[in-house]
Image (tube, rainbow, N blue to C red):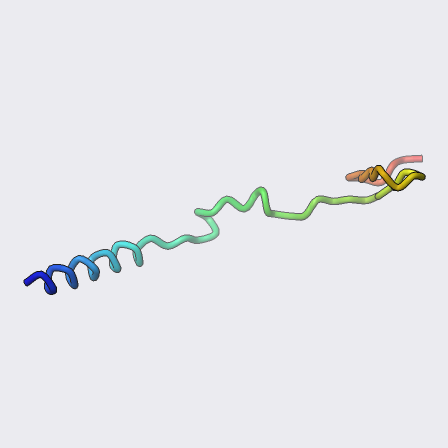
Length: 59
């Protein structure tokens, strides 16, 4: 009797968790939509500092 109850409970858990699916609409992808757009990278003369610009500077 106990084995039958255990197998039924495991089977019901399987059905519950298989019904929970994730699609692209449910997972927020705005954060991972695109990599940062780095146009220019400048390094200081000493090499200790790095500056990254999202868009190229206008001269």
